[in-house]
Length: 354
Image (cartoon, rainbow, N blue to C red; front, side, top):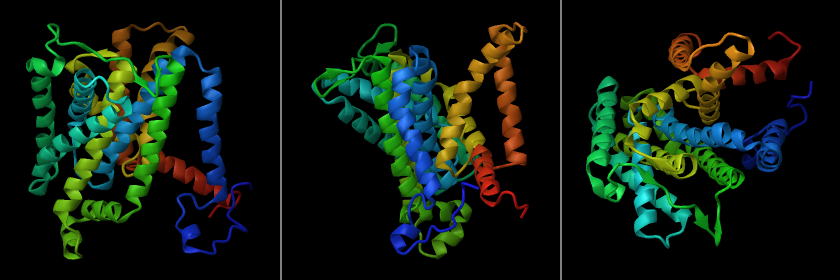
């Protein structure tokens, strides 16, 4: 009975158009933020930070960027790993060649460079769609793999092809502990999630969704498909580029192009489909699922006394991903986010059946 709207009257347009119109939802979000920013840094272990929380937040940021493109604008992309690679190597070269540059500015500039790359590979979306567009974005993956593997300038002439990120230093301090890195990534993820949520509620977000639903009808009512599609590629690439820079600098530390191979692109698509197309919350749910499932497959069988090899756990991971994608595409195309919304709707009308 605690999740009710009774007595919550809206007396202005601002209140009616609020991001969270129900008081209980606002309380819940503030509670989550307090736990994330205050409680977790005090009690979480180093393993929890490095193996779960930091990867989850960075992948959630990348999933938000991909969801803006695929879920909200309807443009299929299989090159997310490539754009994460662009963001990672752009940030690395900026940090190495301009060492006095603030690291936050490095991340932003890396996102802008990735935006340019995303728009270049998004140009085919003006003429093709569906599987043809997927193949065009897949070309970005293979091209970036070749570019950063063969052109030694991007790796600062590293003989092995592997690079190491400089220390994360800004405001006169070095952020090298797991707690500090977690707080940095958390602040960036929360900020960009808020930006994305407001974007999809704005004019540009509505133009994306109109283009997704029926691009011909959208053009008839005055929406420019060129602007809508290219802006979706630009914003999506910006988010993904910053996520790639964070993945390289905060999570990996040292990396090579294989860290952003085609498997990374596929896993990002899995996140968006399982979490929920066209949902910011779904991006977080999908990222949490992708991060936690391999750990569960490695630990739960041992807890139950069923030892399995690492190779078997890896095969089970792919099998479960495939089965869940088929399940969600058939049973619930909007993914985990829709299941969460249904649970909230049931809670709001409980104990009544209608």
